[in-house]
Image (cartoon, rainbow, N blue to C red; front, side):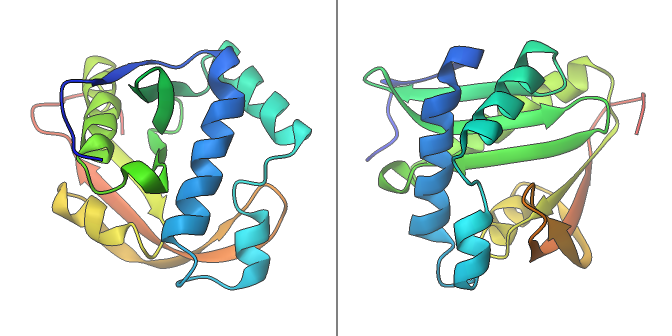
Length: 171
């Protein structure tokens, strides 16, 4: 899929969560499968009813500020910011839309909101396969870490941070 004007970015709603979960699984299975063992792949972004409910509640309570990318009314990407922790929670693009610029636009939505909230520094735990994406966008590696998934399974990740230009606020 080539990035063009038919891809729109908008704020995500609770109703989007089932499709967001589909995008997450597509990205994980299609883009990260060579970097992680089966146990991690099975648990990462698990599409359980509990996961859907947890994410809907986080969006409803504004603990997760989220965006979706739409191509022909289909969600093909998702990003999220945890404004309390100053953490980029997610940037996922469905495998069929990967490497088309959608992830860049979704990350920009997160960073623009962080800047508006006067967040000066963002952190994230990047998957191994996404680390070059974040590095390209100005994030620096703080080293490998173990990221604990919602199911309790641990996965190798890269802790990263970015100081937002012109921000003078919370970290």
